[in-house]
Length: 417
Image 1 (cartoon, rainbow, N blue to C red):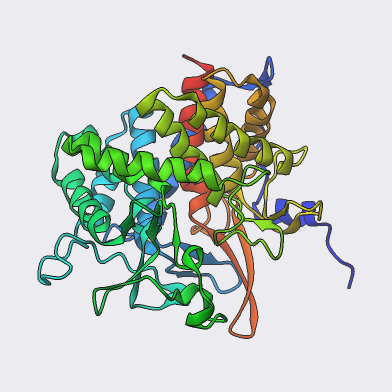
Image 2 (tube, rainbow, N blue to C red; image 1 turned 90 degrees about the vertical axis):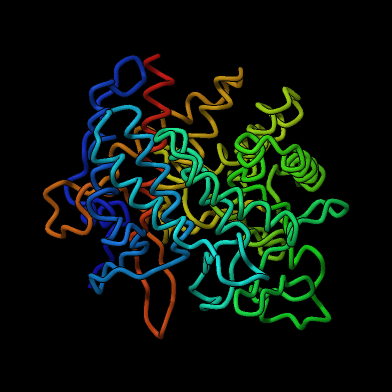
C-alpha cells in the first residue's frame, strides 16, 4: 500500500476544498460574509446539542462525538455565535447563543455553602469528573459577558462575576502573581501542592508553577471589573498581567507552564496566544504599551510557526525542531489571526501578511456543505491525532470552527470598515 500525500489526504477529508478569491491581497467581502454564515450555521445547527452545550470532539473513524472540557468549548461557541450575529443580524445565531449561555449559567452552584457562587465547570477528559480547572471557567466567559451586552440581560454576566469572585477569593494569590489551577469539586479543596495534570510527579516534587499559572485566559477579572465596577477585580487582573510579562520567555511564550513543555521545547498552538490576547486587553484597560509589546513578542513567535500556506500545526518547537504535521490546527490559524489583527490595528503592520495567510487557509480548509457526513458540513479543519484506548484517536475538533467564526468577523471589520 502506498502512503497518501498528507496534503491530498487533508483535501479528501474536507471534501472539495473551497476556493478563496482575493482582490488586492485580501478576501472579497461577500466571500467572507458567506464564510461567516456557513461556519456559524455549523456552530448553531450541529455543534450545540439539545441542552445548548458543545458536542466538542468528533471522532472521524467512529462517527461519534465525545465531550472534552465542555464548559470551555460551550463558552467559545457562544462567543463565536455572537460575533456572527453582530455581523449578520441572524436571529438564529442569537437564539443558539442564548441556549448555550443558559446551559453555562445553569452550572452555578447554589446548594453548597463552601462552593456557592462557583460554577460546576468540570474539565473531564484525563482529569475525570472531580476537577474544575481555572481556565476552563475563565476562558469560557468572554462569550457569557458578551451575551449580557448583546441581550441587555445581566443574568449571564452576573453568574460569571459570581464565579470570578469565588475564584479571586479562593484561587488567586496576589503576592505570587498566580491563580491555582485546580479545584476538587467534591471536597471544595483548591489544590495548592499537587496537580492531577502531573500524575508522574510525586507531591513532594511539585513546585508552585506545577500547580498554578497567571491564568489570564479569557480576561475574566477584567470583564468582572467592567461589569461590577469592583476595583479589586481590576487590580487582580493587572497583577496577573504583570506576572505574565515577568515570566514571559525569550521566545515570547511561557514555557514553564503546561501545556507548554520546557523539557520538550514545545509550545501549545493556542495557550500563549490566550495570554497575548489578555495582554492586549490590559493595554486597552491601562493604555500602557508594555502590555502591547508583550503580546507582539508572542505574536512574532507564532508568525514564525505559521507555514507558507497559512497552516499552524499542533506541536511547535523553540529549538528548531520541525512541527509535527499530524494535527492541522484551524483554531490556531484563527486565534493567531485574531491577535495579529488586534496588533495591526495598533500599529504592528508586520503581521498583515500573516493575517492574509490565515484568512486564505481558513477559507480553503472547510468541509464542504454537501459533505457526505452531516456532522462535518460547514466545519473548519481542526484535526487532532492522539493514541487512546489502544488505537489512534483521530478527531475533528469543534474549536476550529468557533475560532474561525470570530476570525472572519474580525477580518471583515478590519478590511471593510
